[in-house]
Structures are given as C-alpha cells and as structure tokens.
Image 1: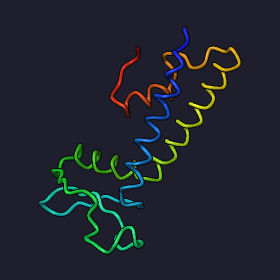
Image 2 (image 1 turned 90 degrees about the vertical axis):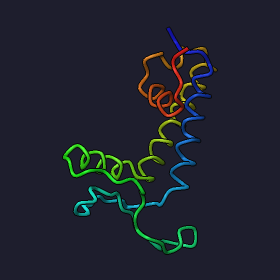
Image 3 (image 1 turned 135 degrees about the vertical axis):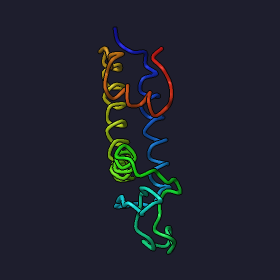
Length: 129
C-alpha cells in the first residue's frame, strides 16, 4: 500500500531540518583525535570564512572515553559532516519530488517501507502513519 500524499511533506521537512543543521555547523572536513587521558574528540577546521571566525578547532564539546567504542562513535560523528548531511538533504528533496510527481500522475508514490521515507522519519522523529 502506498503512503499518503504527506510523504512529500515528511521528506521535505527532513531535508530542511538536515540542511539547516548542516549549514549552521562548521563545514569540515572533520577528524577525530585521541587527546590522551581526555579521550576522543571530533575536530574541525578553524577560521574558514566570515561565517566561521577563528576559534578553537574543537567542533564538539563532548569528550568520549578511551574505549574502542568511543573511538568508533567519534569517527562516525566526523564522517557525518555537514557536506554529507547536505547531500542526504538533496536526496530527500529528490525523493519528495518523485513522490509528488507519481501521485500527481495517478501513481502510487512511495511505499511505507521506502528507504528515503525511513531516513526522513528518523530525522523528523516521526513514525509511519
């Protein structure tokens, strides 16, 4: 069974939220580094442009322990940098447009288990209706 027309709204809302978060963050590239007994940190560049004046290069104020799982968490956060989020936002917008087009021409649109819709729901913290 297809998803109601509001799937496009869900996808667009997620794209907008993700884009706003990514555009507000330090652009990257980000990296991880073990800071001795302090644990793992995620670092980004400093002084990139007028929007991001020089500052301490640390992107995250969160300190992770020195366990391997903490290293994995820091590496994951660094990998999901703003350019990745902006690319995902573009994919969500494209899925919303494809859904709207399919519904407009009498098609089914996205299915409840569509991957793009699952991503949008995870970003929006919503569930299938």
